[in-house]
Image (cartoon, rainbow, N blue to C red; front, side, top):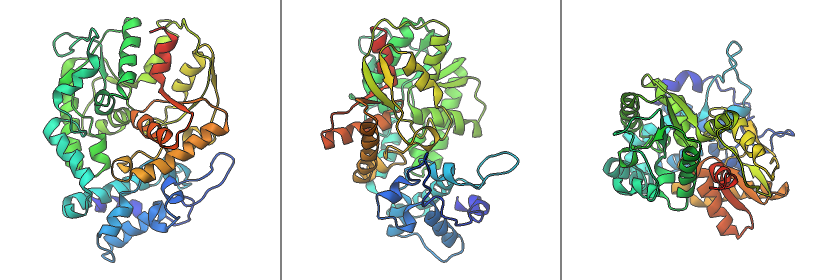
Length: 397
């Protein structure tokens, strides 16, 4: 797999911008580097040197190399801050996180003994249960208990609400999918769900290196979605959204539009189908998930929705938007290196406190989970909410 990126690997000039870039918009570049002593192999330049050494036969995969390769959160800030651009398209000349992903794929395929057991657990769970979190398929319907949910495989609808594994199976995150459901119901959206027929999007599996499993999941979802005849897939999970929007089109034609719930809620607001009846007097700051922000470029819809809620005082953290600091939970880091994930999330708590926020609002269940765990660990007074929960509350739901 790494051979596919050989040309990109040699495009890196080893300038070190991915190591340190300090401006009024950027505090740091790599969250992992900042919390691992700053050693070269823990940020993009070092990982690209490792990739070059492997291609040239100077290095072999080992336990220590695997540990370094699997500590990347895949946040993409190294790509964002790197100045190497295609002058014609403006696109990055290379993406370090894709090179890291390729090394993970090679490790998983050729050196499975180097892969941590936590990753094997989630991969085997996907094969056994259709989700990475060791939950039976029937558990996907638990969050809809008491709701008048339409089974879209039996009754057609224009919109599929894709709940996603993480939010639908974690009781602490289920409020965000319930809120999304109630918002759509109140706005009289023609939508349905898949329930236990919903499969995994494959994002987690791809990030840890199982590209064949990802491809199988993706192709099955593309087939299923197209056969449903839907017009739009809406999800409240930033990871699912990025995977559908950016990576599925590489594997097949999508006969439908892909929207994140924040984008669709903004659309409903503009159409006058959402009315706010309650004030929420709270100082909040918005955390940009890497999957939704840097990887896809969705920054304004969540903020526009928050600004429309009566009583909300939106305070911007520094850094934000394309320069936003990762929560620390992505790329499989929360699963296998939870201490590192919490250390990175603590920075986010400090940034939120710095601007006087009472709560952090986000649009990603992974971010919400990691930040919440860190809030609890630090006994912080900050609160964490998904955007949909704020919208539902302001609608009086």
